[in-house]
Amino acid sequence: MQSFIKKYSIFLMLYIVFQPVLDAVTGLMTQAHMNVSFGVLIRMAVMAVTVFYLLIFLILNRDNRHGFMMIGYFVLLAVVSAISLFINYKTKVLFVTTLEVTTLAKSLYYPIMLLAYLYAFEELAEDRIINRFFPKVIFFAVNIISIIMIVAHFTNTSFSSYSYYKLGESGWFFAANELSAIVSITFPIMIWYALKKINTWSRIYYWITIIIAIYADLLIGTKGSLLALLFSICMGILATIVQFFMYKDSRKYFVGIFAMLVITLGGIVVAYPAMAVSKTSELHTEMIKDKKQKAKTKKGITKDQKKYVQTNKTVSYLFSGRTVYFENAAHNFSKATPAQKIFGMGYATSFKHERDAKLVEMDYVDIFFQFGLIGTIVYMVPLLYCLIYLIGAFLRKFKYMWSYKWAMLVASVALGFGMALMTGHVIEAPSVSIYFVSVLAYAMLNAKIFLRTNEDPYTIDVES
Image 1 (cartoon, rainbow, N blue to C red):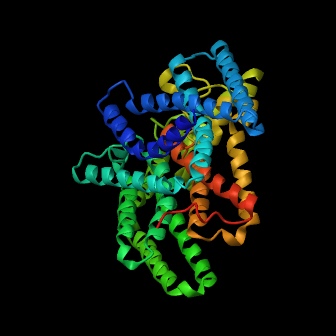
Image 2 (image 1 turned 90 degrees about the vertical axis):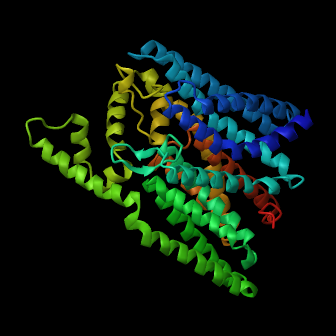
Image 3 (image 1 turned 135 degrees about the vertical axis):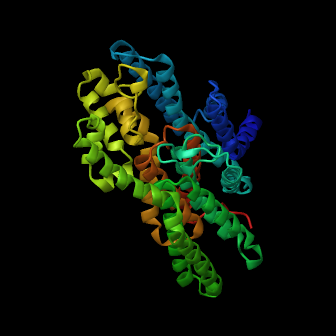
């Protein structure tokens, strides 16, 4: 059994590298209008095996109080989910079983995989196997995404990020928002890996992969990916400045890194006018003017379009109409039964036709409407625990948080939680959540060791 635990822990690490391949194959199958989603089947199969892995791990650690608590948590989550399904089966005007069950299965992916990575990292940290895989697997995964994006771009086979604008590209990845969230969360880790590898200027080729990743990310044309790039590089600059004053013997090195980061940031700023994200901003303004003009005609505009144009321009642009979906979902929730308000309304609240089912695409909001008051508390407990623990560690060890490892981990975790609100498709999207929970688990491992031993675990880092 212990051998299985070790081998599967290594598999979970290597599994991250294959995520872009799963997503690209799924995107191509979706584009070809094939009903079977390759990525979903593989991920659900891995999740099922991971449940078995967790059971074995917990059995081997059954005397551990934390193991008992985890079993209790998943039993409670299963009970709450089953009650929600039953209530909505009896209450909703239209209950589409496949949609409800599939959505619930995707939702359960995050807590299961988060716990799995927490255990896997503890297992692999004992003999430093973790250093051979993380963050290298993240670095390789992002490079695979970049290659696919660039090949799709130059072969003119890329999908459009915004079909209505005909702007932006998502390579062979079908969902631009999910792709944007992935590159946003992983980009800080990629910077960390590259900067730690450039211990001599002869290894500057690692930064070339960063430039390629930036180019590929900017092809997407989403606001989230652009803001994540800027935030990550600024965090790198801040960390470099702090380390410049902390380590006087390495100032020449940090001056070079600072110059490289500033030049990269300047390049993004200079290139902004030519980016798809710049053009979508302009088209958004034109679209608002056009809809306001149409509102004055006999034909007019729809009720949702009217809400959209009446929203603050900056808010409507940042959230891309999600505020309208929120108003509609909130209206449905206000009319829900008390049981639904407590245990949720399931997929997309209430709808009379399947084509009318719309998610808000803001994770925290969708989770609340899906699981209700009690269900949301239960569902979000692992994330809230990790967030509070990491904030506490950050504040207690603030002066040590400016190494590239800690600065980039903070940036990645912050972007994960932030993107869940701004663009959605993070917590409840298996293709994205696996990156988020793996980074979160790695940060938790480092923070726990730091607080327990009062020493920064320098041995858990990028191998030179």
